[in-house]
Length: 313
Length: 297
Image (cartoon, rainbow over all chains, first blue to last red; front, side):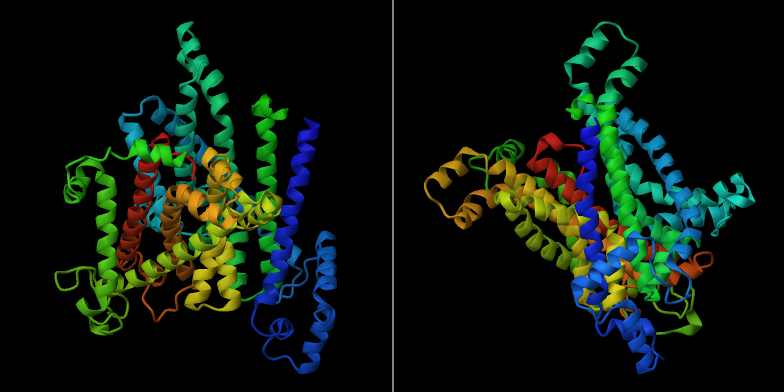
């Protein structure tokens, strides 16, 4: 087990390194002189030169990359060009809404999608199966913001059940906070539900064909016990995998959803910083999102071994 | 795998029945395939002819702004009195051309990378780790970052949307190549001293064509979604060119009083993407019936 976990851990390092190289090179893709861009339109040539010196932009690529990586590993992401606040501080202020939104979305998605996929596999010609599969294709075909606006138009503007936009921080009460996140979380979970329901159905269909499920039925085990003990535990690996893979889509969706609902989270910060060309913030956020994705998938890999002992060896 | 399944999945060639009859019976045998093809074709024709059949999408008519749908203006008018119908039809061009360009670019590059990684084992690990790295960055984030940093021109938009799609294509191709290169006929070709280029071209690529085709249909669909998101976030198609994304972006302020400004482009986009996804699913089920009914992308 320890060997397996260490192996997965080491496999994640080159991926993170490649992401770092990519994010670093992003700035050199920008047309023009990065020092001029960072110093701003109104900077005098000495000021530009000072920025160039401070950021080491006059150094060759490799030493510059090493220096940059060193700073990042020590937690120094530089100053935001827009607000002149340290990037780490800016990011820390925005974590709460995004974290809550992601957790809520995953919870909704798993709670809705796994039962749907299960029923769809058990009764492949039933109404639930047909609706689930049709809904899943629809889930893949609608951009997050279209789902969001449809929900806003009906549930917020029409029925006034939820606020149209905005976010109530946890400090104003847990219920108020969760209430303000319901619509964003549902919009965001749409694609995720589609993804998980399809995979659950396929995985369960596969397991249902196995001999041990027939044996369990034959020896008269209760259907509920078969589902939990035999079917779900054996279908768990692909389901957990897709939760991990879908996480990238979720983080991307956060950028759009938070913009639509005016939620002051990391996604909104990303969209704003990109449009303001606030490079240090953009670099830090892309690194952070990629880091979270890699960690989530590392956890998924470790969960495999917990769920399915065969993988440990 | 794909070849044998394809043979089972397709109806056995009817001797004595001509091509026309086969195509004519398609709506009965594959209703979803036929429906999605017809829908996509209709959108394609719309994209080509729209400038000639609609009013000027940029014509302002402030007196008739925010008018609800009517026989004269089937989709209503927007905040400056432009025809939503004309703009939505012309907007088809941006979505479809971006979708096609991304699908072609992604397929070309993804197939090259996938074939190299799958066939030449020495570079497999390095190439696939690089692909993992690109996949670790959310597609939307990668695309808006590139477009915002370099500037929104059609070439940059297409490249920015293709980049996150390439690893998925490469993975699909690599998986097919890995299984195909174990086939006896490939081994035979290698033993006979065939050059790698010939083997790849003559023996491996035709076998991988099915999965590649299916994946490019999905890429086409997801490229249109990404383009609309870019335009929606004001990082895509410039506002003077009507696209579904920037129409929806402008329409969001008027969601309460004039939902049609946002609703109709959203509907058109959803229908186009849905048609492409259905086509992909139908093709996949046709080529590999073991997948029928849905499986991981």
